[in-house]
Image (cartoon, rainbow, N blue to C red; front, top):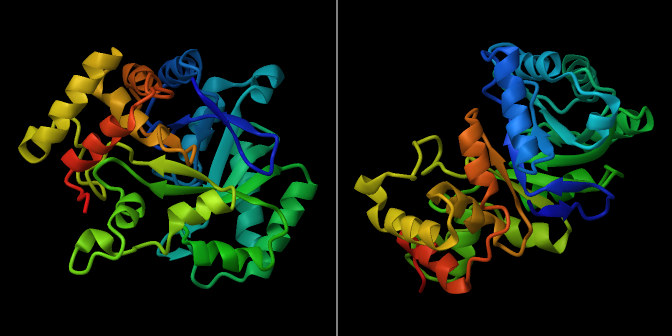
Length: 309
């Protein structure tokens, strides 16, 4: 398992992350088995959010009840959670951020979060309130590092006018078939080509220039929760042929190759899994550090339907 170092911090994390948004209905033994399978595969990073589950903090509480980390084990892993989404609106107020983190810590049965991400952008954000919340949480030892999710470069720069802690991560949707932040740059300046439209104001380059780790969620989704491309030969026959051939070459599954397409990028991204299947966790982890060649990487890009001008 490849690990990455978050710039501006001493934090080292696996480049494959286990997301835990679907564990609310699982029993203790199943949750522990999922956690153990991740650890055996070399994964040390676990992703939560206050909204995951049928009620607030449900998945965090399920994790805390089932896993019961010892002090030594807690120090060996990275736990991150997210805050800011409320029913019908977004909320980056100081009061909501601080209260939610305290609730998350109680649910997870831990004293601190290694990383806290602001979930979806709050257009009513007041950077000074976010800064005050971050400062209070950091001073109290409740959050070590901070970041964002689904934010544009401009939204990040706005936060930085007041926030004094480094923003170390940005969690964004990314897969071979859904990669506008990569595809638009490849086709820059091509008039009349939809792919050339910059939909995020240069998010990829901004992250690399500013030492922000990109975390790819929905790494197997066709688009926005449109189902997975793996095995979809009706819409992605050529892509699946390429995945199968490369899987055979590298002695992994197509799932591992789909992960490797993201981890191969020199931006040192992380891949956030959403599976509750221990076997799929192991298959994904196998793609952590595969040395796809440029030709292989671009072959997957092209067969997914993207244009090389």
